Image (cartoon, rainbow, N blue to C red; front, side, top):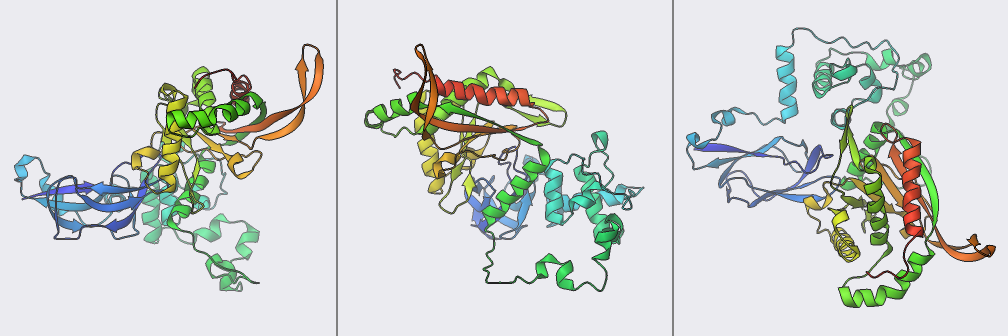
Length: 445
């Protein structure tokens, strides 16, 4: 007999964990190769995890609603193959613990010198933390104030995964005591003395006055909230704005939309037209299509455009159009409509939300003139397109200036100021506006 570990699969470069939604198999159940064993969910999409071997479920290590780090063993399958076929003999010696907890124990056993937590100093608030470290901190209840006083062993004193897991272990074992009182200022300390009512010290116990209704966040909203907070903490956001005269584009679409749908079998919306302009400008300014890994800039050769899509529940998801630069307008239209329909009907696959290099969100769909969107990590920029409105504007003509009614819209782009300066950010968003303004009204599809 051999034991095969079933690992929580990697679901995207920015996804560090997934939630167990449902087990389709239980301990002792037979399972075939590629048969679905469980359903999992991230802040992007729900997905099924297939079996990597044929055999019998030997052990299930996590329960429904457990949040599991990527790469963690979630179940074990007993196969009929001999151990010499390549299975690790030591697999049966694992305990039913997440990998990150096992690493904490290992760190304590092999560390001869415990780190010193300088809890008497004031936090600076200027340290960089990786998404993984922030994720562990959130799951273990480690505040940002505590993170600031953890000694980092990484490059330039950064807190590594090992550092924060060591701190969590020390805190649980009582080696970090009286923390809250030592890191707060005099006024904050005064609010935590014994005379303060418990409800004031613990926000969860606070009473809500007036006529209120308390609604628990659903799983997806919690994950989205965590992702947004981590993005704002990771990237210093800057937003640039411009406006565009899209009269030619609007009139062209109005003229061809019926024929387009009849001929191509799909509707043409404004979204593929916006994406087409964005792709052209990314080719001119490739740094916009990158990500940051510590001190390294990762230039993305593929142009994969994410399009933020609102779900019927009110939550948001970002399906990705892969290799958008290789698609013509018809191809972009079909991809946009197909992914939007799949998102709203809950039929997106895990791969449909992976690999994005730049994101566009159409805030004008809901009547908003402009927005300041939050970057979709690990990307470095996101563009928002506002509602198209008719306005009287000054038009320059060979005969002189005149006032005309034109279709106008605002564009905004939030970008990571660690890598994109204001000159590049403003130049890019202006270039997209010019692409839209110079739309050829005589063009074919």
